[in-house]
Length: 168
Image (cartoon, rainbow, N blue to C red; front, top):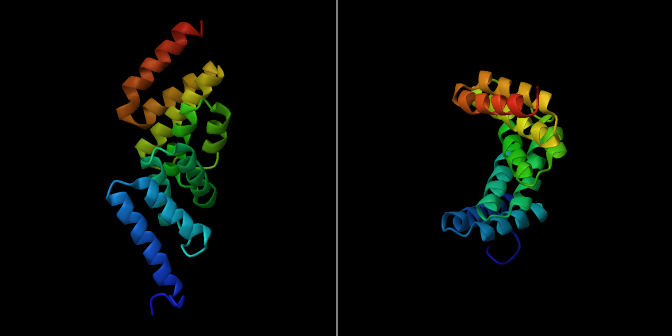
């Protein structure tokens, strides 16, 4: 019966998730993220990969990048997911947190998909470049271009730039 507090945990979880999704769908991702977060904090919603992924996307859509980053890092630490890792690294690069990018990249394997491998090495190259480790950056950009043909041209441009400007 509604209002008696006798809801099963599955129903409560569904309500939080459905309401969160509804807000996201209606273009109010901040409210959707808050609802899902509350469900997680009250331990009504399970912190599964799918639920955490939904929450990180809601925070990101709400332009709450720090909140999204924290959830992405949680996903990486619990599940080792490469896509969450790559998205977290992109946020960290925006803040010029190069050491944190390199540390986070060690927690997820690039996998077998060329796009993941290429982006993994490209982000690693950006972080190494940002730190001034040009030799390592050069190697990472080379690996990015070899791993994913779609990144070959931009990776080659980075390699040429680094060789011309920093490695004589």
